[in-house]
Image (cartoon, rainbow, N blue to C red):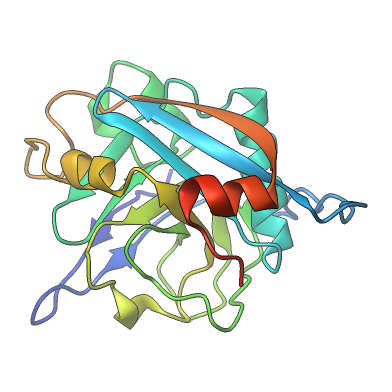
Length: 217
């Protein structure tokens, strides 16, 4: 099995998010909703607090894949297995459900990938949701499971156009900060598992904008 790593180096930080898995077609995007006045809100619950996010319509493969996994309970019991204060928090690997932290981030054999969707205008802003992937050039397919949330308040814009950004946190930015500051080992793995559960709720877009102050593109 190939190994997964996450490394960075730059004046402030350079990042390389690794995931390895044989490539196959991701889940097909769901048919466009008949009524665009509703959207799905994903709630991530952790010991540090609750994070809510929405996914972008113009990254349909990533949106459909993430929603399918969140609704099925796939992410329940997974951890944020890599946390870097001033950068991001990464999670979603099925291996993080077991008691062996050494395999967190390595991924499952034959779990597949999602074709990159480098939609223009989606930046690595504070609270952006993006897909991890193998090292390589822009356009390299994304992991079908692992994702990261940008924790740097100024964004990490050197990654723009390199990794698929497919959602945005609309509540709970301070929770990302708390998770990023957890005590960790030399591999950036939290010393205590940062477990999560997810649920998906369909809401009217007007309510999302009013309740969470989110403005749709």
